[in-house]
Amino acid sequence: MPLSLHPAPIPYDDRLEEIGPDEEKTVEELIHTLTEINQTTLRHEGHANRSVHAKSHALLTGEMIVPDDLPRELAQGIFARPGRYPLVMRLSTVPGDILDDNVSTPRGMAVKILNVDGERLPDSRDAATQDFVMVNSPAFNASTAKKFAARLKPIAATTDRAEGAKKALSAILRGAERVIEAFGGKSATLLTLGGQPETHPLGDTYYSQAPLRFGDYVVKVSVAPHSPNLTALTDAAVDLSGRPNGLREAMIEHFATQGGEWDLRVQFYTDPQSMPIEDASVAWPEETSPYIDVARIVVPPQSAWNQERHAAIDDRLAFSPWHGVTAHRPLGSVMRARRWAYLDMAKFRAHHNGVAIREPTSLDELKLDTP
Image 1 (cartoon, rainbow, N blue to C red):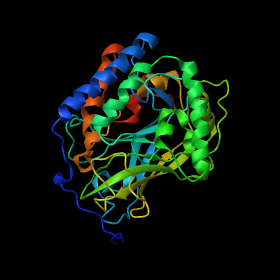
Image 2: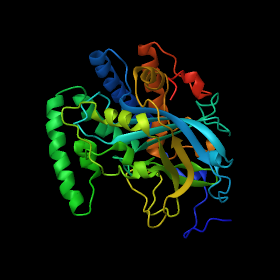
Image 3: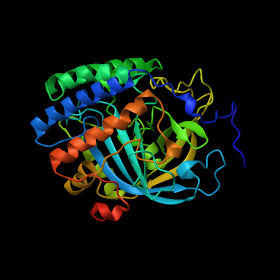
Image 4: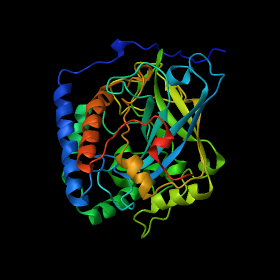
């Protein structure tokens, strides 16, 4: 049965992207700044962390279930074939330094799906994985890679400094964000700077923020809580007082006895005016193009975080929107910059930690504890 969407999805075309003349220079600046963050945290921690999303709160395994009755418009790319696909999920917070959870910043979810078919993207030709990298906000905090590179410089200058001041600022910003939300709004700027409410990350909805190809079409991707035990955590407060790793502790407590299910959803590109490809700071209007379920993610009870998982997933895996198939090619300025930045940052971590980072072919390769 065909999918009924009005207006109809716009077909994918290579000409949808508009590559700027100075993108190569922007990428070099971005990599330089991210490397500064890496070097700062390496000196302090004695360990090479990610330059963004350094602190993990849950390192999980599970599976993605693609149903056998998807309409043609949804049966695209890795969703064209029904089945059950093993996956790895990493939940994190945005900064490149390992901060007390009272410095409340946006949360991230990275999903690596294994054993997928399809023509591969560059730099991912020898793998059979598809990554989706998401944050709990529908829009990115900068419109283009150039603007993101400019915003990242002051963040790099404060990496690993004055955690007490960051806690105080975060408390102020959380208060300001509550006022804005009381009047029906939300400030992406305040949330990014430290105004993220102290709520449970398992109740959040996560978004790719920037678009990607979806076979014959273009979409943004989202993962939203589905099972009642996760939807009950939406906006649920987490007490982080005196608990520098309180979010991780909440994850460990949850998955010790419970699993969780999420809906993997797509939002079709249907209007060039309200849904820009090159401006990642614009949330595409859901009243025009709602998110539609294409698969279910199921994670069973397990040890959500321990040193064994930290070594296997934090240190020996890299997540990138460019790990995948050409049918899900990342689009837009921010996504194009991520290709090179993520690649360089993974090489930095591998070199300084003395490990090999490679794409897994099975969950058994990770040699994790039995869930």
